[in-house]
Image (cartoon, rainbow, N blue to C red; front, side, top):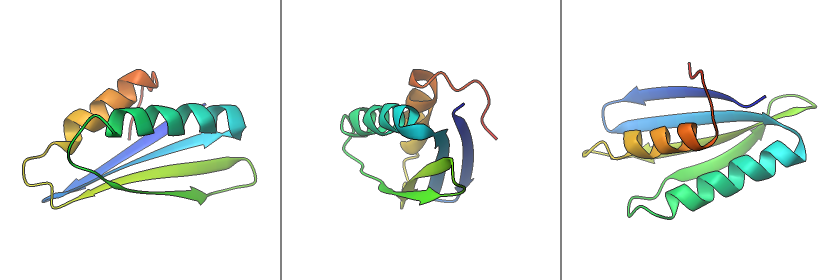
Length: 86
């Protein structure tokens, strides 16, 4: 099951997507890469291991004065069919 968590402060936004296994990982990474590539503003991304089974892809936008990240995150969440985002 793919889970998501969103955090935002002034000019900073972060979306963390937790996934389990290689299949979900490939889906998450390819989806995020494809969507992010469509936009001029580029994030910092990194992956963390949170348990033996789960990893997290973190997508961070810094200095996002025009708040473009929200639309990008929304597209990612919809494309991955994430129904709940904390």
